[in-house]
Amino acid sequence: MRKLGMIGGTSWFSTAMYYEQINKAVAKARGGLSSAPLVLESLDLAPVAALELAGEWDQVGEIVAAAAARLEAAGAEGLILCSNTTHKVAPAVEAAVGVPLLHIADVTAEKLAADGVQKAGLIGTRFTMGESFFRERIEARGIALALPDPETAAHIDRIIFEELAKGQVSRSSQRLLKTCVTEMGKARQQAVILGCTELVLLVDPGANVIPVYDTTALHAAAAARWILDE
Image 1: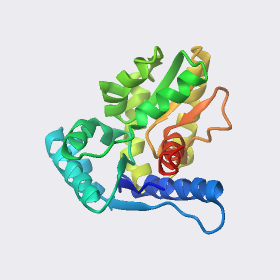
Image 2 (image 1 turned 180 degrees about the vertical axis):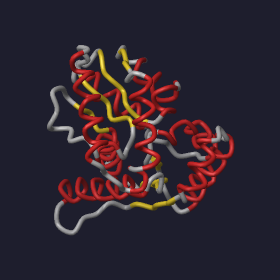
Image 3 (image 1 turned 120 degrees about the vertical axis):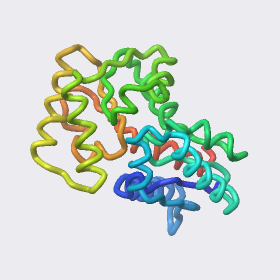
């Protein structure tokens, strides 16, 4: 098996999901007492999030790239960023190391394309929804993306940073996300992408009117396949 480096902590709640799902997949594939060879660099979200919200992305890139270099030095043969938003600095990470980065948007795009999805709604942080670093990789596969209305998008961004990143799940936030997914279905989207690794805390991918693609699960499954060299 190949050793995978994980850059997490952004937030640690979704990083824990990655760790569990990757290990379960490896154990299922290999049997017995098998588990995944992983090395984890868990960042402190508070200063990273503050820099993101202040638009100081060069500094975010320096922090994440330094973490990537430490993982490579620790023997990681490949890397994942356990956060959609952090992929905004993926180019800085790739420039800092000589090992491959398994990009969450590429994994998601591959699955959508394989399922024949041509139109999908995207929900996530203001950065993932509003900027190109995630969207362009999906759209490059011929998939048209639709976003929530601006007011709903702002509510979702607030929920992610003020609630989900702290592990908080409220009924009102669950209702808002359910309404958002339902409205996207009414707008004839074929699917909805949970473009934030914490959103699965609020949205049950199997209990909605249209297919919901959980980027955390897709990324973790791809990571396990990479570890197993499949």
